[in-house]
Image (tube, rainbow, N blue to C red; front, side, top):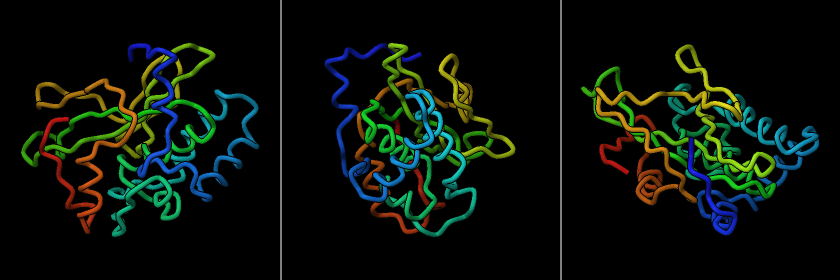
Length: 199
């Protein structure tokens, strides 16, 4: 579980960035829709998480041609890879004054390391009522992925396998890594994205 971040540090997890553009009108509209059906903060976090996980397709799963580069583009396009889906969830949370960050895993592209590695992004969320950070993975479920909302245990899309060189960084970052942002702005086809580097 993530280490507790001091209250004085939480503001960096509430800031708007180029990738987490929560003041965009389309994001604001979605925040208001989620608020309307969420009687509590926990309900809002769960509803926002399940919206991004279930209503926004993962670009690889649907073989999307378009590359969504930030939170608002993911919402407009209804698709994104894990990097920008995590930006959308962070935007929906930050726009409702709920601190959220991004955590990373280094995973193999195949069942072993023969096809290189990919950086996987997921979210951190600070729940004030529980005085703790949790991690949520809104990548999107499929036959081999069963991530769930939980405040008690991590039920993520993937578990890192050290025997294949995979790493769970268990980190907490206030914005999408600049190297990933650069890749999103230069790649034309999502399936061509490669990240054979450590974060």
